[in-house]
Amino acid sequence: MKKLLMLGGSHFQVPSIKTAKEMGHYVITCDYLEDNPGHKYAHEYYNVSTTDKESVLTLAKSLKVDGIVCYASDPAAPTAAYVAEKLGLPTNPYESVEILNNKDLYRDFLAKNGFNVPKAKGYQSIEEAKVDFHQFKMPVMIKPVDSSGSKGVSKIDSINLLQEKVEYALSFSRSKRFIIEEFVEKFGYQIAGDGFSVNGRLVFRCFANQHFDTDSKHPFVPIGNSWPYFMPEHVHEKIQNEIQRALQLLNMKTGAYNFDIRIDDKEKVYLMEIAPRNGGNLIPQVTKYATDVDMVEYTIKAALGEDCSDLKLIKPDGYWACYVIHSQKSGIFKEIIIDNDIQENNIVEYELFIKSGEKITGFTGSNETLGMMILKFSSLNEMLEKMDNMANWVNLVVDNNELLNTN
Image (cartoon, rainbow, N blue to C red; front, side, top):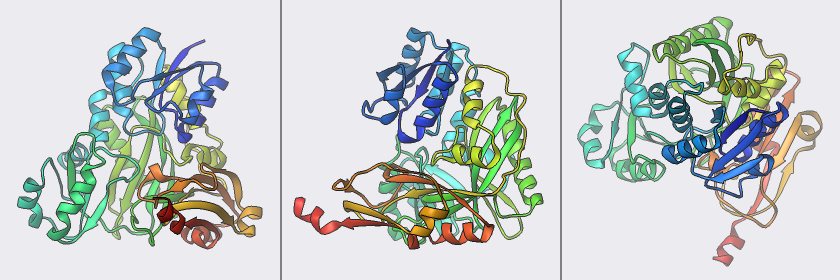
């Protein structure tokens, strides 16, 4: 029985923990949240932060683990690569994972290697940013260089908002750095989805349409993805070729990736994010429904140095989606109302993470996800129509008056 150290035990990491056990491995989890639901499925749990590289290294050494998995977690990805590299376990290069995980380093890498990339620069202080601000074409995005789940992201078109939005970004940055980058207008849907490389070659990818809540206070946080990606095949291949070039330059090996990509009206590809880990929001689970490829299993096999050479590209069959249940406002959660049509014809899996009477906050990042759905549709038109207007079918009843009375 091989020992596997899984970094994190959140709702989104439960599938990887369960899968590893089903594959016959001894599963150990760690993070600083002992109440996370994934830990109850593991054989052992340790209260060690997944971002504390040296403490995780000490833990992994003492346990004599055979592999380390960072599943659906940006902050833990560098830790997994660092520890695996130190112990001689299978991994992508730590230096490359650090580049992919830090927006300023990644933008610099793209620019130096001739990729399409918005003008961007990283900063530590508001004073530095103010000096350069008017060199950028408006509007610009302000982002923490190292946050995940779109937390701390803002779009501005005036220096008057810079201080407020930089402070907001820094509140989500572990390194206390932020990036300013010019906004890239997208053509069609932003591209999401996952992929997998074997010995540096992108052998599998499953691109998705990314959906946003445009009425939200923070409209840059994805609220769902749908498959297949609604563009001609030559666009899929063009995107794949750009990803492959990046992976080759970074000397990536075997493992999973999560993508955020834009194309413009001239079909220029912008690799906004290549995260060196599986996607959250149940992306691997929907991908399995659509292609019958279990990327969770392949991720575990890769971490243990097992053969992944049988993995190949399979196109999605049917119309599938994942949807993030979220609230527009803060308050006391009362109930969720789901239209009968969605319940009877579309929902394949559904889980609510909260109970009636609990306090919730308005959706500003993936950390405020209240539940998840996996859905299936009969046609592309039905899928896009419902995913773009899900508020018409799924509604949360929230009492913010009661919250005011309890404070």
